[in-house]
Length: 232
Length: 237
Image (tube, rainbow over all chains, first blue to last red; front, side, top):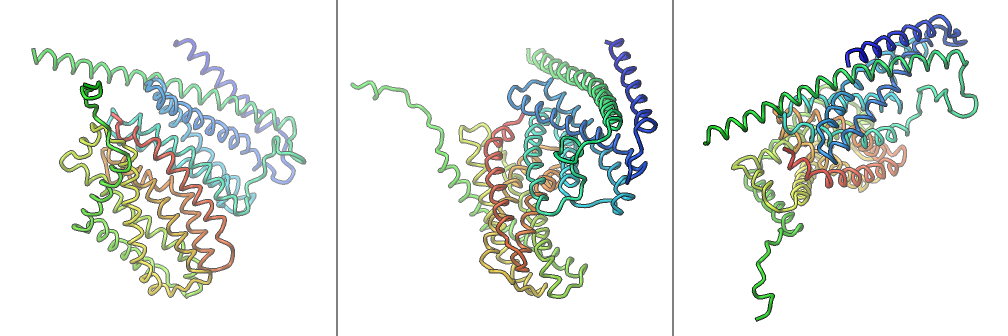
């Protein structure tokens, strides 16, 4: 277990440093935006990773609702936590890029707003988990995750009425889309690095959460055994 | 002797609509006698309206453009006051625990509570409308009957999720604090549609059709999800 972890940690480190080299040195300078565009190599992979985490959280929550498996709950908790961290990175790097390029820090367009609401929902998810009594919280939290997932679709549609200012998708976005292969390379390397990092943290956190669950169960069993012994 | 005469009496679970009707009637009677929810909501909403009108010094034209937002924010805050009492009321004498062990369908309890809250907030709106008109010099440019449709759809969107999340927050350690934290993020799209619809009607600039349809879809979808998941929340151990 420990050696797998060290190997994975080394791979993550290598991917992230290679990704940094690619993003800063190898990838060509963007024609109109200049070097400010390079934040793209961190903004976009963080966003993809965060959405993937939230999607995993939704799947795990539904799995928990269907089966009551405490492993599913541990997955749901850890993916939500890591997802919130990556989503925070997205929400911080976005305005840093937007200020020099758009001239404003923030605008209420569909993608920005949906991401912000998604972040708000998952922060409330983590708060719910923190403030509910131990036994009930997995069930309540998975119900909230389902509500949140449906809600994000509504948020996106709601903002579509206004003109959207976020750049149109540059990858697979139809005619005129597409980026320099070196840019694509840097982007994908960074995404791999971010995914590996997310996986590493989720894995560690998952093991910790499983241990916590087992300790809790052991305490409960001990209490039951004690109560039985006392009643005899 | 026929076989049916000696057949064991099977306990029939109470009928869905009976439970709904009885719970709703009970809540209405309680509210009629105590007026807890209405009074606290009304005074709270009044305070919000007064504070808003002090914070923004508005001309009639400006107020028409932003009144939609002000009205709904005031109602959202006020509704939380009533929503928190919905389930707290059932905690006294362990009424909620009794409900949990009874064979009565949980969904009918949920719908009864949601309809009860809906009526409270609608009454609140009826009482608040003159106040808004007076304080903000409001006059609708678009047809006023559309405001009624917007308020019915918007209120249901608030209370159906509110009732659901109030049931959820009652199970947490910090009961009253938790409800707005859960409800507000989920209500953002509904709030956007309410404000867009109401502003469109008040200013008469564009058609309120799209926001109202959006609200109706939102209402239907979240009523169904709440209906399906309420049993899980009520019985969460």
